[in-house]
Length: 256
Ligand code: PGA
Image: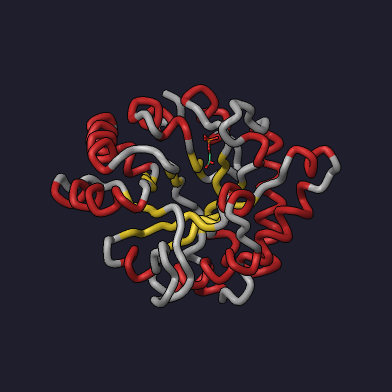
């Protein structure tokens, strides 16, 4: 049986100045112990403006939290005003990049094809994409959840070889559960993640067993334990509750 180390990623979205980010990551590190890091990989994804400060804090204090970014542009360089390239992130020791978050797809019009280009660019730069997928409430009610995640995962990984796919993380985030306080039931989340795992198997074969699939959407200290008890859920992508170091630490400790 393949063992997948659980991963807990904090997506800070457009919150925390670089000064606040330094404080939050320090406070988080005070609350975590070696056994937490041994059991779970911990990642924080600050805004671009805070990446460098968080990186130097993690390095200076030898904090074993990995750095993640929330977005990237697929091109190496060029006339793309306002964008940040994969190599710029990699040089900051960024290990993970959130790709295709529903907010980027819905507010900024990112297509499956653009998301796929980002996935491949992140892997080519030696980093790990956290590829997001998930359905709207209308899609769920119309029974289209499975088809939606199958499409997003298949399109997102087009052209990715099984060997490269070992670096991929997938996050299942039902859009109606993001920032709403509504969570998918742990069983429903587990069932959809099984569909995602099956899809991964058809796209990258045996490698699918090594790919971590996270749940995201109103994860809190109070529901982390139940979610993490599900066999298919390999961790969480946490938005609002990751802004507070106490709450995020409790989630990393599965609600204890
Ligand atoms: P939330 O956000 O935890 O605030 O619901 C999750 C996400 O959007 O990644």
